[in-house]
Image (cartoon, rainbow, N blue to C red):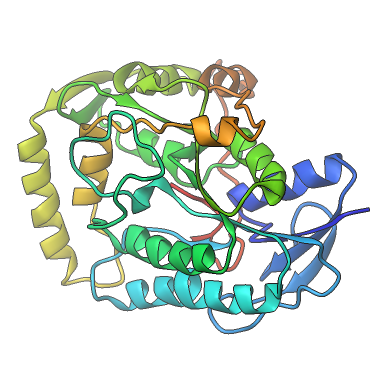
Length: 329
């Protein structure tokens, strides 16, 4: 029986990887600050310690610090301690075992020109600490011969970030989005979990992971709102105006370094520009995405009042209120 070590197995992405591995008959070792949904637990603080990976045949590294902290803040330093320094400690402990390192499409250079991104797209100029630290962490992983997966905007049951943030932006039946609708890749967490378990046998390198087809932004947002029983009209605001507001919000947030700004340049960039991932490299290894946003909406539980009951209970994998978990954007 193969033993799969999953870091961050109590978080959003890691819990799905651990559960999928167990369902396939693997022995699962959950490595993190909290137990995972299945298997055995082995405590690890990614910001401080070298993990104990003894007995593991394969390592899937999902643990990550997420968020959009103020540049230069203590929160950014804490993020680096997990995403970069924690990666170095993990790779040292892996000692030649196959490692699948879950990164993010946030590492790719921002701006236009992302209509169909291959893995050769420049990795530079990230707009926030998350993108910068994930880029630095994956560079270590690639140099060590790991397989690096780059999903974009991971969603699904237990999502503590993407959908809750979207729903929280609805005000009085109105949702403001920057610029006209664009085409975007999204990644169902089930598709990512399948890729994590398949990728241990892939050649080292980076691989994009996303749903079978990109989505039209506005229609995808409407679908999520309908699925959660939220009635809201979408109104477009000029992207230049949204960027100005984001810059002002980030400047004001420097006065409160422990709080994230309500709008950031990164968020505007992710919504205002088309970002479509080319997943043909992963498909050439036999992986195929089978889950879509339609499947997610159809699977939502419905309360007695007819509104979908959100499932935002994804616990953190290596931390709690400090924003460290297994989510990836």
